[in-house]
Length: 569
Image 1 (cartoon, rainbow, N blue to C red):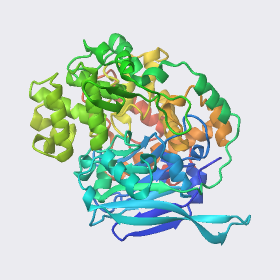
Image 2 (cartoon, helix red, strand yellow; image 1 turned 135 degrees about the vertical axis):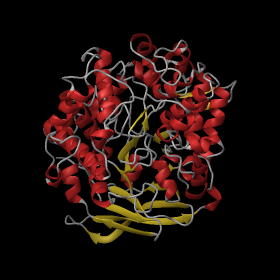
Image 3 (tube, rainbow, N blue to C red; image 1 turned 60 degrees about the vertical axis):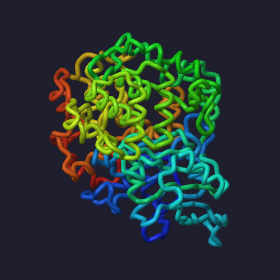
Image 4 (cartoon, rainbow, N blue to C red; image 1 turned 180 degrees about the vertical axis):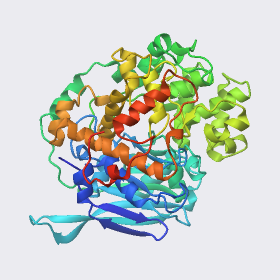
């Protein structure tokens, strides 16, 4: 099976040391990306670690496809112990970072420890005098530590400006946190290219707890990985010629369809239809789009650079989830207000889904739905933990009782837009997902929206859900963008990775299993697999899911984890 290459680079930010370790066996089994990072995290993060403690570790990883020039491959994975869910969690971001990470020659970056000063870490390649078996010079990473107390409280764009001025590197070479990460907001994101987010789960706060403001990457020493062509050029050509609505409106193109035919959660989940959906949906966003935007090497170009000169706001987005979280969920029906909130979250370094839903919970508690000015004010206060922002920075699960509102989370993570009260398979997915109420963990909602799967009922959907989870886990391992599924087909994946599709799904299954086993060791069991609302036959459907996985009441048997090679389910 084709896999990523390069060493594990362990950076202890407290000791200011960097060590590289060969992890060929990890890559041979777990390929790269999310799977490899999860395997390393399972082995190296103590099961009883404090998410904000120095013993927590953060992993940044790529897959073999980041060595290609194929569309839908401009993504990077990040894995660590989440301060929001208290479990092991992975997120990934697009942009232009991945190939700069690969260029340093490393396979995975591991950050551990805690610095006593705010740090920038710079990872570079450097040619070693040693020679490989074929006589070629080999590269070892070089790490520099820079104390940057002057950047305390800096926004993400301000940090990028500093990197440009002092390292002569653009934001595509950098990951950074904003004030939210420094202030340990539990849903703080890690940003790259200023507007692309490792969004869900609060890994930005983990970097903040380590006093790491940013990490930069630069080099020209990517370990050789031969990617077959075709399908590399075929995918690129088809992406360039596509006329998908997604290319013009991003994910916002589905807003009115979902609102009219299914449910668009509105006013903190009190209603299922938003009267101003058209004012914040695909057409409204497209009117503000002023140029095309893409990720590294991708011809699909589905990003949404938008601006409104009257309001003086320029941002990238919003995507559908932000249209929901800062629009319908808050009762806000002006696309410029949603754009402004989107830019605030990017600049301050916060997950726009969790931030928007948490602010919506506050607006409900104050009977202030529709007050966009108040919502933006509170968003800024969350990032600085000022006043009410200190409570809201803990997230809905930890603040709902004091606010006097329902707890719309699963495993501590705020809900995405796709309503499990209408899409029952998606509701089941939210309940059992190791990551909580995140729609990207397994996308049954697409099958239910299209009618391929009946939206009503949960029974009989477990096998489909398990395959969707396994496929998503491998997608994040390769790494392939979720929007490329119509182009990077199962057959093409087999060619790209030199393996049968069932082998790829087995790697995904092993990843899900390791995540669940880690969380079991932290006390997660069946009681964590629940929803804050009722849907038909949920408990019986969860039993079906466990049966397919081979788990006992939500617990992974140790023998499933002890096996060296991934196995199906």
